[in-house]
Amino acid sequence: MDQKAMNADDAFREWMKTVQASDLGEREVLNPARSGKPLGEIVRDAGGGLVFDTEPPRYYKLLRELAPASSGK
Amino acid sequence: MSDLPANPCDASLVEIAAALKSGRISSAEVTEASIDRLSTRGAALNAVAGLDADDARRQAKEADAVPGTGPLAGVPLAHKDMFYRPGRVSECGSKVRAGFVPDVLSGALKKLDQAGALDIARLNMAEFAFGVTGHNEYTGAVCNPWNPAHMTGGSSSGSGAMVAARATFGALGSDTGGSVRLPAACCGVVGMKVTMGRVSRYGAMPLSHTLDSVGPLTRTVTDNALMLSVIAGYDPDDASSADMPVTDYTTGLEDGAKGLTIGLPTSHFMDGMDDEIAGHFEAAVDVMKKAGATFVDVDMPDAIQYTNALTSLITATEGASLHQHWLETRGDDYGAQTFGRLAGGLATPASRYLQALNLRTEILARFNDMVFNHVDMLMTPMMIMHVPSIAESDVRAGPGASEMLSKIGHCSRPVNFLGLPGLSVPSGFTKAGLPSSVQFVGRPFDEATLYRAGRAYERETEWYKTAPDPSRWESAE
Image 1 (cartoon, rainbow over the protein chains, first blue to last red):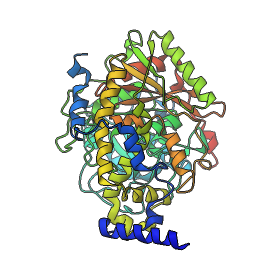
Image 2 (cartoon, helix red, strand yellow):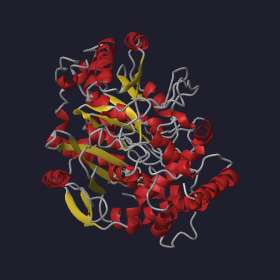
Image 3 (tube, rainbow over the protein chains, first blue to last red):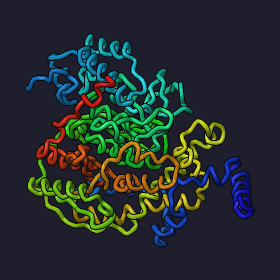
């Protein structure tokens, strides 16, 4: 492994230790079986900047409101 | 009333429930036949995780001694190995949970118990329900009854295989990204992914609190409606359970397709579809048109193209939160794909995860405006590809794994992200003799209309009358 890759792995492992309190490193966590596209890119592209004033619990309210019984259908 | 087939296991769930109720057959007879099929066909297809024949016979004897009045009285069923029953092992397709004995009763099993059903076997599944192919590096892949060299789909792989192989009349599965509908589609049976909150998830192994749902796999749409009528409804033990009225899903089933307006998506769901599968889908649309349905093209929100990946992100992140301790201490006990996908969730930034959750409201609102303001439901292929072989879908954690899993879940995962109901119904067989299926996607809590459409299609095509040829496994039996 070259120096640059080793440093990146060390940095990632350090972040995992500091933030996640985990000994798992880059090679274990950044596995090919996970989504290919960067996660942040997916979320950013899907959002289109329209999610500033929503919060997750609103979803469940909307789901019930859209039921046929609620909409009168 | 029609005669029962020579082997009662070849009857439908509705037929066998009626025969038991009328006393034409005993629960002991039906259970013995099911034990035999689960033992032989289950072993041949690697679909059974556990079968206690003595306990099954005890349950049947009790059912015959005091005949119940419930809609499934005396009917033996078998379920995915993740629905907890006190005192019984539930291994969730994993080495990590080998020998695990829960002390709670799953909400769905409780309702089936109350309806008089017997619970006689545990069925194999993808490890921790995290896999769409039916592979399992610990228990081995479940084989497809239509061709044992092909995958069953997952994660409710044993449920799909044993329902298709006429070894059980119906089975519970769980669906986080397609895990009821994909094995139903690959095995040529009917699978319902219910609206979020429609069926209790209490006592069912969690993978993603946001996306998990519990639903039935059966041979016919009518059977599926009967089983959902039993398991649907509010459960005070499940905080996410919806306190919404439950319909008897078996009424209105024969109302036909006339009067239904069905949307055909102009983007995403048909993108990248195999030519042969496209032909099957067009033929299925023609059947529904002839049955009286009106079809309208409907545009999708642009964001629908991201929902597959967003579903994967949410599942991996929430799964990682559940599995972190075991990932760190028992990493070698996981299959490579399960480990890799769950461990990947540990690196999801919390802000991105919450943004992904927030997007559900936005995208559902847009989807409702663009789709359900114009049509009663959406019709899509269930998979855009043929059912691959076990070998070609054995991607584990290698290069191409993400692409393969995304392609298999292309039409299923968006429905989980939105939390809508989706019904998978068989639509014939490819030249290779493997099933293809269509999916009906409906408004929240409108499973009844999906059953009506599915039954209208099934009535015209009768694919459910074709059974897999068990001589393919005779050497194993």
